[in-house]
Length: 94
Image (cartoon, rainbow, N blue to C red; front, side, top):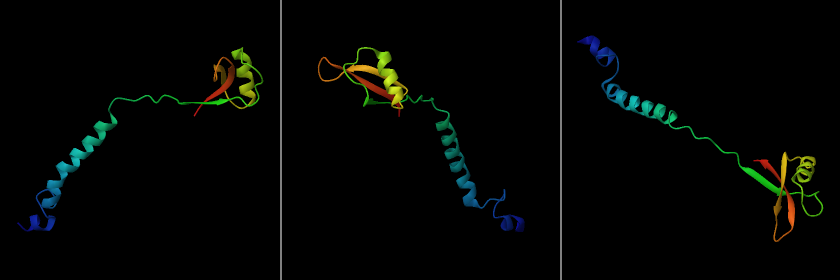
C-alpha cells in the first residue's frame, strides 16, 4: 500500500530501525542492570605525614594530636620510626 511506502514500514520505522530497536533495548537494559549492581563502599584513604613541629619522642597521643591540629591536620598518633624512638605522625583523609 502507498501509506506503507510513505512511512517506511508498518509501525512508522524503516525496516532497519525495527531491527535495531531490540539491540538498543538490550543495551539500555544492560546499562540499567549495571547501575543496580552491588553497591561498593569507598573507604577513605588516609594520608600520613610526620609532624614538622613536634619536638622529642612521642609519648602521649593527645600531645601529638594537638600539635597536628596546629599544623592543619585533624588527627595524629605516635608511631615507631626506625628503631625504638616514637615520632608524631599527622593523619588526614586524602
